[in-house]
Length: 238
Image 1 (cartoon, rainbow, N blue to C red):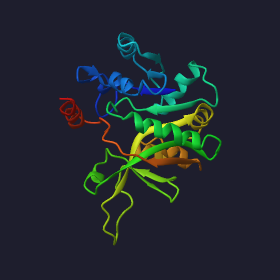
Image 2 (tube, one colour):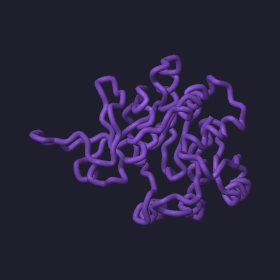
Image 3 (tube, helix red, strand yellow):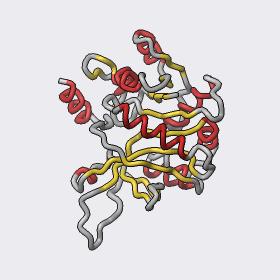
């Protein structure tokens, strides 16, 4: 099951999920990009998104406006869908209209790998970026151990290269894999200060002593967080 959380009033670019990319609303284009992999549902706080999804024959579920994060939103949708506790759920962000099917499939496989590991609550992925790109706070960086288990996520450039020339950073891609059981566990965890400071929900997992497993992927996709990103996306389509 692929669930796409779509909050209408995003902070940096309000109503962005309905902005047109090649004459198709962004959230719809994202859903279409992954629809051949598995069943797709949009989880949204907006009746307008529900109505538009219906026009494109995409299933959508209305969720609360008070969800703290996108993952909390997909959990609410998952409960309404009565999913089995071992069902694999992939959280694909609504602002990823160029996400490749191969990337989502790799995340499915990684989630299966850790399905019986109670310490790994979620799986995700990253791509390599250069030093200049890593300066952008809208690109979340991640540092991992030798087994690609996350040590920390930050909008700051990490790790800090004190006496080492570093031109390769790991850029986190905002996709997550859970089972229904682990998703429930995540959404019942206590939120910590780090999550609030960085505005990164995945830090909730690390704050509570659990793990996020990642894999490196090759992708040309990018999240759309700003007007500049939106213009870049429209240029890409053209």
